[in-house]
Amino acid sequence: MIIQLDLESDIPIYRQLVNQIIEGIATGLLNPGEQLPSVRSLAADLGINLHTVNKAYTHLKQEGFLQIHRQKGALIQPHSMPQADTPFKHKLMAEVRPLAAEAICRGMNEDAFIAACRAAYSSIHHNKGGTTP
Image (cartoon, rainbow, N blue to C red):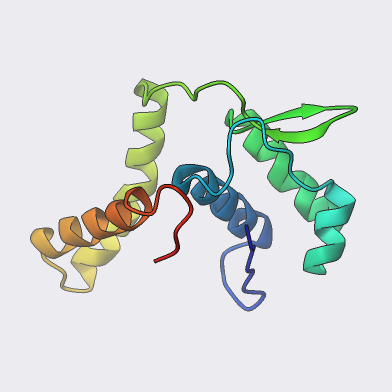
């Protein structure tokens, strides 16, 4: 999996890293039990601070996407993820709500907003197995 960071983006680097790893899991580019590079190695490869990578890995561990072992390092969660439970649905609503509000402010109608959400979901879901769009 190739990680591409936009150092000029308003999205924090650790968040970009988190988002790309989650998308890699969703598309099957990263498989359960697969080992990720060490914090130092990934930081050096990407040319970013190791604390940024550590923050991303810690976040992914807290969200259940990674397991971190002292000897093996960071592994993609080898067990299945929990289903979309109530806390996840609350998190989803909290993150989608501001986007919906901005879409309304920018004159986007509900159908267009839903179509954009559907397109984003489909582009990831249909790329399962590691193909790129």
